[in-house]
Image (cartoon, rainbow, N blue to C red; front, top):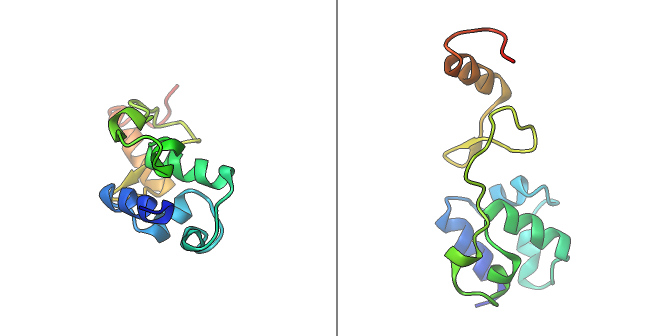
Length: 112
């Protein structure tokens, strides 16, 4: 299986299209599609692996155990700006996150 095929298979299994994965990883337009014929930079491959919560070795086929290769973050703070909150594979808009925060805080407007 090629790198491109492994990325595509892993993305599909997690509910991502290659286009949405490309966007979430912050890569140039259609960058992942170019991996059919070109080798990606380690930086771009690492970004994709982080979005998919797997290791680079897993994507390269050096480690076939996805569970072992996974590097999932089990908890996240809703105020963590480094994390993109998603629902059904789509980012949650900031205004919706604010509504969620107010709901979780029992309707309080300001939280500490």
